[in-house]
Image (cartoon, rainbow, N blue to C red; front, side, top):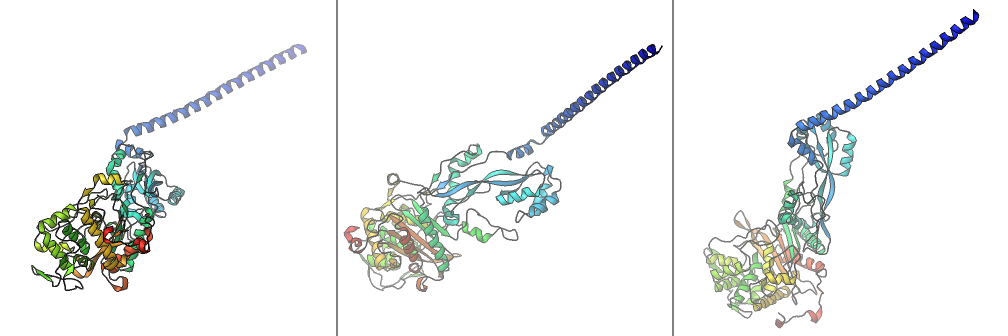
Length: 579
């Protein structure tokens, strides 16, 4: 009996263990199914969210999507600009610009407040309007500094981002601003040679998307940065020292027509073409520096025009260096009286007419040639038509609608016709270089290339006579203040009453000096201007006391850089046969 009971208990225990094992296995299977269900549900949720976003983008405004796509779009490049010696004048730098996706902005008020702590002069109203626009993309600030980008990132504002862009950088600042010009925030040329580069096809390449991070060949200019720095510095100092409204200068290679330096002050920094005042308005006074008085403005060039009048007389066979004209009394014509400044009141030789800058003597030469001949000669020298060159915005000369005798007389000494200082320098070069008018260029040009486009405007004998007059005036006349020992500078002053509101102001001058050097073998033309000086060397306000000293400083500092070796003593002495 006891044995039976023991066998029954044993069987019962075995059955219980078996049942427990079965129950454990079932539980594990159930847990595995639950875990698998959770995983499947997770994948389903991710899939549905992704699908929902794809549907959202598919139904979104295509224009808005295009704006967002621009964020990662191509970055337009510009070629470097270098001077004739390979010195860098302009280049592209990578920078960051700030944008917003207004649909993702959580709190526009808070975002504006935070951005204002980093971005100076932030327009709160405009920025707030952009952030609440509900659009897909809005620019907030272009071309941030690295510090600004870092500070904005630290603000942690959702819905804003940065786009890499190109920013134009000019290492020399204002040194060559009127030659180089500047670009806008989209790196498009607006002025100067930057605009010229766009006009030559860069704008079309950009529109076709062919300038994105593509290495572009540098654009070499004819400018010598060393000389450019000197010219700009001299002009800036002259404006300050002579208390003038403006000043400027240009250096020209008379054998090739290359512009080696050109400056006009006041100027501006092309790295910052516009400035904003504390009240948020545009600084109009600063923007006056955009005005280039050397090529984009016209002036009555005063007595520098006597060079052209006497050259006209030589070329027409009306006078020679030994001719004498009557300058003993003023000329009365059409209610006007024409007289000389510190006149000699006697007959003058042609050399004396030039040396003493006689209005009466010059008018007599113009009268010998006649009105039609006078107008034709100035047209031949390019002084009455718009100058052809790469520089955009060149001004068009002005002249009387109908030339009368009084017009011819006053134009003979530089009143009544207004031209740009640059084309005055170009025309003067043709009188000195043997008679060839060569269009100016801001790009490199060889002598052979220059000769292929040169046009003979005066005879070689006329040019030789003009070289003699320039040299004589540099030693004996009004050009003495421009003379530089060893460099044999010749030239002609020009002091004109400035035209204000259509009338000549007797106490306000526009001064100029056109010089050539070295006169034993002329190579360069230098022209300087001083607009409305209040004082000058020794208190004078004429060109001899203002524009001439500028010539002297430019040549004394830049002459050797241009390859001119000074000559002293008898080696530098010239005779009439040398011209």
